[in-house]
Image (cartoon, rainbow, N blue to C red):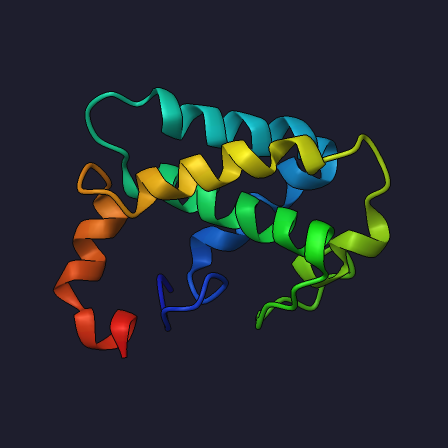
Length: 123
């Protein structure tokens, strides 16, 4: 189906990571952030999305932020704060912000796609 909107969870790829997050969220998040930070040339679309999805889960855990989703699973992003207890994820906050900066930089495929649709992403 692909993307049907511009919100974080309005793209099929956002749901591809649920099993990995359920299995070991801390490891998945850390790997996605570190991969973005270590990429020296170009961050592909899927890699950008792992950062965004990881950051959204982390945001829910840290701040209780609610995300519009098409997911009806009990373990989706909006229940993550209630379901995930350990280990402490607060140490990932800084690396998450740094990885998100890479996603919005000129060396990320998702950034290029956003530039093609400025009305949706700035409006």
